[in-house]
Length: 143
Image (cartoon, one colour):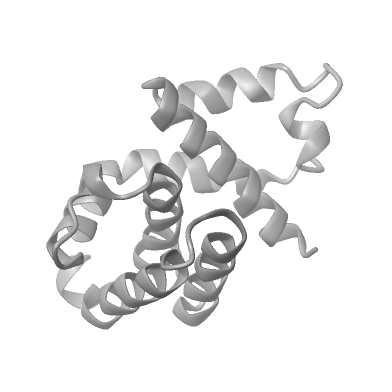
């Protein structure tokens, strides 16, 4: 598995857990990084990949903008109605599409679809692909 793919998976774990526990994802990230000396700590599991932290911090910094874009372009679905794992995947993918010029949009979308395929419902990959694809199409009007 590629390093950035692993980093996305770790970032997704943090975003999902923070959502479920009702805590700030960046605070949770800092706790996990502080646990690096413990067996299974984030840094040891993520291979000390700084992209995990970049993803989580990026999503948290643009949380409101990302949620607004997801809300505006998800037809018939509110954020609260989406499965929690889909929300986390979409936030992660939207940040990469909208705010990370180092990752091509198609790669960000493909990685998000793969996460949805592996971790969510049968309908989620299509939903994630469609919503992130639409956001990619209109990103010039968002950022």
